[in-house]
Amino acid sequence: MNLLNWHEEMALGIEDIDRQHYMFYEILGRLHEAAGFESSINVLKGLAGDLACYASLLFRGEENLIALTQDPNACSHLMEHAEFRHRVVELEDVNVLANRDSLRATAEELGDWLENHIAQFDRPLARRVRKNHEPITITRPVPSMELPWLRESVAS
Image (cartoon, rainbow, N blue to C red; front, side, top):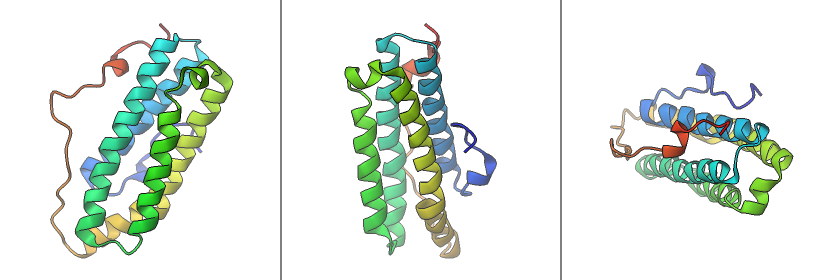
């Protein structure tokens, strides 16, 4: 994998979800980088919280599409989301954040997971949406919603 970097081949052609995938990789990359720079636990905890928040936002949009398209893989797709949410929530534990090497490895694993998830679940869903010419309605983030930890330097 191109370490924690979203790349154009991952694009689904659904702007909102592509942007969310991109942002998700941005947060993962910052968490990985922050662990390497020995950033404070508070910075790491903030990034892990942002990751959990963004996972929820991303999956809510995808789950809207799953419902709209009556996705035949809905059960498996939703189970994948639940498993991922669980792994991300575990990252918010201070003991997990304190082990920097493990944290970096986990960030890489989550990046790999997302890349595989996009290929296995999201791409077929996007093809179904485009094939059916269904209107795409996705829950968008509120414009004032900001991820404050993204503004902080990961090296602080």
